[in-house]
Image 1 (cartoon, one colour):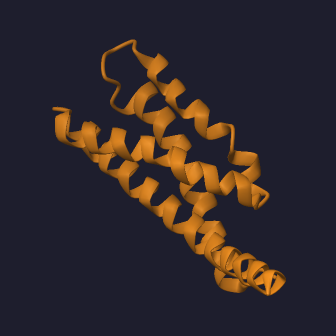
Image 2 (cartoon, rainbow, N blue to C red):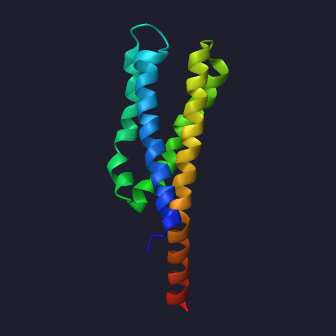
Image 3 (cartoon, rainbow, N blue to C red):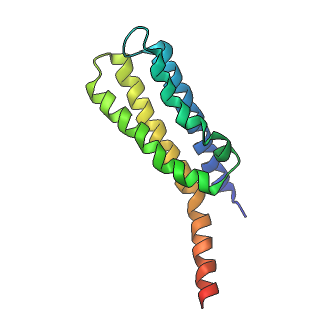
Length: 127
C-alpha cells in the first residue's frame, strides 16, 4: 500500500525528472549552448526519456536504476558549474545539480518503505 507521503515523493521524482529533461533541451538548444550551432548537445536528454514512462507508472525497478543514471547529470552539472565562463550556463548547471539531487531524494523517499516491507517479508519467510 502506497502512503500519502510516498505519493508526494513520487510526484517530486516525476516533476524533477521532467524538469531535468526540459532543462537539458532548453539549455543546449537556446538558453546557453556551448557554441553557436552546437544544439546537438541537447541529445543528452535522450537517456532521460527512456525511463520516463516507467517512473510515471511507479515501476520500482526503473526508479532504482534511474537513481544511478541521474548521477551522470549531477556530475555534468558540477563540472559545468565550475568550468563554464558563461554566467547563465553556470546557473543552469546548478539547476541541473539541484534537480538531480531532488530526483534522487524523491526516488529514495518513494522506494524506502517498499524496500523495508520487502526485507521484512523475506525475514518472516526465512524464519
